[in-house]
Length: 472
Image 1 (tube, rainbow, N blue to C red):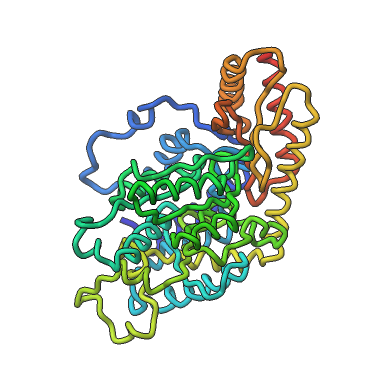
Image 2: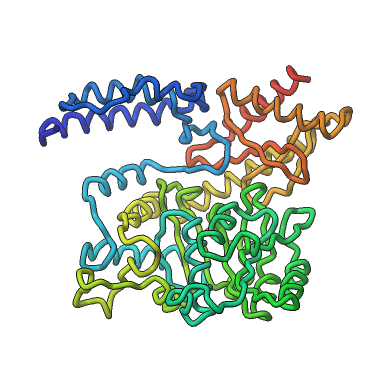
């Protein structure tokens, strides 16, 4: 066990190691090439009975754990969506771990609650959200969406399902696009609606939900005796960052009195730039909204912002106050234990505070705009190349493309692009992932690292060209 002096010595070594890692990470192979079970075989099957020296612990970390890590913080990581952090966020996380704050109620750490209060207001301003909304910091957008489903369920039934379960309740219907994030599928099961009552709505050529198809589905369900309840509108789908038409969807939700939830988990970061607020036109019609700074606002995981129009409905859904959690200030402060499922709460607002203050809004806008500009540059290269094609519009900084020399079948193209991506990733210089759009194997490139440069983007495109040439 470390004493204060040895803790200080080892902490200083760790900071030096962390600094060196951040300086060198872009030269690491992005994707680990270990085989399943390889790391586990290096770890003993039984726990140590006696204490081990920290130096031995850290040596094992370097020799046994590091080889099995994918380097998400490399500027050559273009896969999934980024889980981008910044140095300011790392420092804040070090403080958070040191303090060990639990912020479930105001009294357990007043500063944690009140900083979160203020940060939610700052982010409303930065994102251009309705100022009457209320919000809190959650762990993930998946849980934010679950909170929205549960609150919609309880508000629609006067909180009767919380009391009596689904007995004598109608069969509720939930709606989203075919391209919506998979968390909605899991959440309708958790919330008790049943996966068969999740209605996936057809999308257009840009992979955005078709409002007319949504209204047709709602009308059909009403005629069949179902009760439409909830619509999830994506501001940036996972596959292609398609943007559902919020204003039209919002009008339909108002017409049929449905809860409108906006999933802006990734693309919401672009809303800090006013020119991107075409995506959120009609946001005032929404009942809830979720956005993850831990994806594209350079804040360590986990940090997800969840806003609601009706704060009291949210609290009524989740509030349970045993005697040991009652405090004298409950009537005049926010006790965030009542704003979500879990009781325990990390001090998440500290890292977001550090990030916003250390960058400033102006610099954040500049970096995000650069990422979007470089995505458009990459799109231009693809459009101008005879052997590649775009497969989806570029709304923010995600580029969906494939090799297509117009000489082979669709089936062969899918196999070729799958092999192309496999070869690129195994080489280790960059890392990308795929999706399928209209049945076409689609390579996804997304650049969201805070220290990404145009050179990284140019190098990535050249790597794609080189591997395509070899394979072709």
